[in-house]
Length: 461
Image (cartoon, rainbow, N blue to C red; front, side):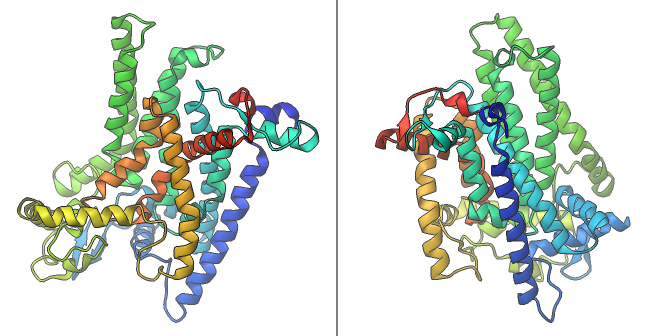
């Protein structure tokens, strides 16, 4: 690798490490699933994978997009089509084998490492940090120091995070959601910096318009993969618009015009991606269904008299629930969940406390994944990492962009799962953009203990 490349971009060896680690994880998970599923057909470690795999097959063969379960009641919008469409494409190219999907997801995981680097670089554009100083400024140590900027450190943390490795190997929507989420957040960070951040770029207004459309398209794809992301999109847009309207170097009229234009383009990109799904649902249900018809079941899963904080969908087999059609079932369960929230505030608070602990747990709390080894290993890794994220956020406490784009997903999903069923599984995707904060925390700690040299932190970007 040439010296300019080393200074200006993410070293290829980081991406190579990320890809090799994820390919190895894919092989291990595939071996484990086959070993556990001997004598029966099993797709992956989690039961959700069966739904996604079945829906992907309907897309590939061109049959009706539905899941028939709980008797003979069809569900036409049990899951949004983002991840099943990805699985269908993988099946069409690589065959009906889970290992092929895991290998494609390994590539997506490596891509996510690069996207973390780009997001971190965009969010750190206005900051000047030192370089890690691990020895005398000579030979290979000098080259190493030039490489370790905050964005590169964030990428390395992402590449080696064990839970991220597992997330790339299992057949769950997180593997596709994370790249879309990071792409949208990176675009928003570039918009946040404004056209003046890269004055050398030609036609900044056209470039900004294309980025805004891309942010909307990536956000729409993320929602079609994980519908719970839908409420976060207006939060980020509102935060960006508030900052944009307060830009001091433009007249109020120009600020309003730019903000309105960018927001409209983001929404246009989102509608272009999600519009076909809305049209399809309007034809099936005769009404507007923005994502999936699963809100009632998901909320009742977290708010019911037998709720424990973990997911338990056994109530779907109850005789007054399973015979209902999809829309009626959703309406009844949503009504029951809201009724429980209204009449049992103390138990709701107790459940929220339990869910908070499950969300921030350093080790898996799901049945079948509990062991002393996982508990000790998870604690030794996750606790220091969360401390670094907290330290990094403290360092950037006056930076709204860092709060919204880097820490925002962590707090957003945490708040959401105070009401829905909770586990660390819902924290892991949100932790990915926060790796930039962990890198900031690492650099701040290194500066404090004396292994950081003062200088321009953008040197290694």
